[in-house]
Image (cartoon, rainbow, N blue to C red; front, side, top):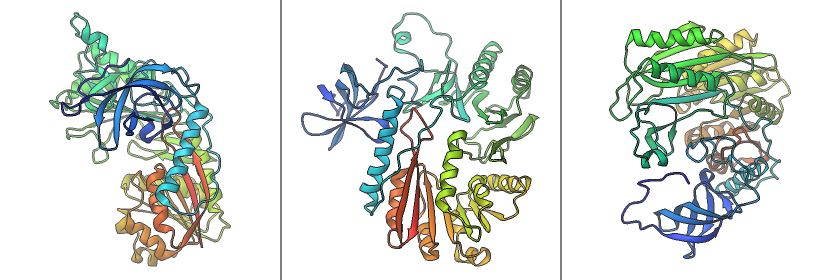
Length: 476
């Protein structure tokens, strides 16, 4: 069993329960059971249908959180995980559940959220659109360097001195300062694994200092790898210490070892956090961007650009969005949270004009460049906070939309944005969401004027509990 430590406070005495049936998959992909005292059990690393013995590590008024101590009877929904890091790495929590059952529980979550939170009239949900590729489907991965890697239980219990403590991989769930060293990740296709492992080994061999997140010291902080369906690859190394000789030693190695890289970038970031959106990105070799292609359109992707992380499923998602918009050619479309303008350009040929709004200025500049490069002259893009840009004055300048497409972040739309949409009352709204709970909340706010007439879940993230959902609303 995986090693757990420090997971219970003294006042929360651990309890053990036997022969607990896992009856459902709940929030964040955890299993749901019932304790003998009537409380809900939220159980880590189990599959619906399992019968397990568990030990609690957190107690609340209505529920316990627990970990399995023994699988008494394995569910027929189980499958053997392919990844050697499963159970410790938090990236693919459903790798032990067969894919057809993953799809079932994702669709169930969407339907339950829309009904329970939205409390509105809904049509029958379309069957979830599964992904053709269930491994190696991501086009972007971010890895962290650490000089204090996560140690296994066997390593901790051994009497041997452990000298190799450097890691390049993922954060242990719930432990911001511990990194699991990753040998092979099944989420991103090569050259991702080869790049990560060779960079880690070269840094080790040349005594380049890995970051210490507690003391905020070290040279190497993070590594981002982006790939495209056209075969292009971007690598960005984030450094903490500004040491030119050591920095160029590593970057020159990457450039020479991987001569086909499309983009090699770096950033020096000495902030408390490792986000790069307010940092200067330096192009060390080749281009400062890569290109993705879709239906003959090319999209420029920079280090800071948002682009759906599953390129193949993004195409399916955008086709559904375009179909739901049902454009005839004379409509003014607003694309809210447009990112780099992918949806806006994807639907532009069927619209009179598309207006895109996005908070990230670099993304808007990329959207403008993409539209120009693609020969699209019926789009306009604007950068700024949605609440402050999407105003009456903006509408007066850019026109009254017939259709609104919105693809907000996980927190959904701000109430002011929803209120503005209701004031405009476009004929149709297509709402793309990566969080059906906040989507349901927003649908309830729109219910005074709109009815939901189409619901289509799309699985963008196999082996995880995450799911996208597309909803079309029409005026009542």
